[in-house]
Image (tube, rainbow, N blue to C red; front, side, top):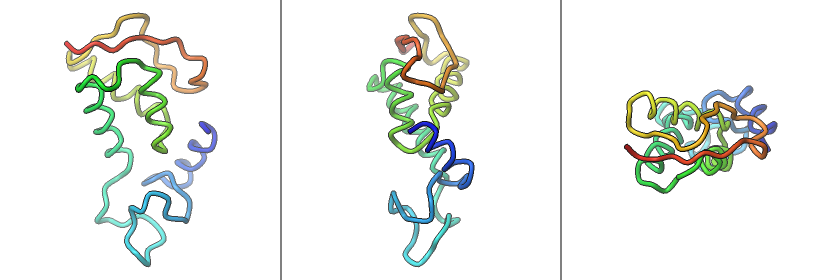
Length: 114
């Protein structure tokens, strides 16, 4: 699944999709990204941040999985958690790692709100 998502984002940098309307986020009659819709990465990043700060995502494994299941590369989660740590809004319990590929082999850590 990781490889598929990576290829999708390589070819469609606005929504990581093919020429079919998977998420129903395009207007009828359009084939590609419509300027009236926001970038999918930005939307998913915001969702991940809200889920972390609300306590719904408590581990890196949950966050990586969430990004992937929502059609984004898992590295998106790493970007969000890194920024939240930099801003002092969260800390982690365990060893922080930036690994976002082969997520089935990633060492888990807990996310704690500050």
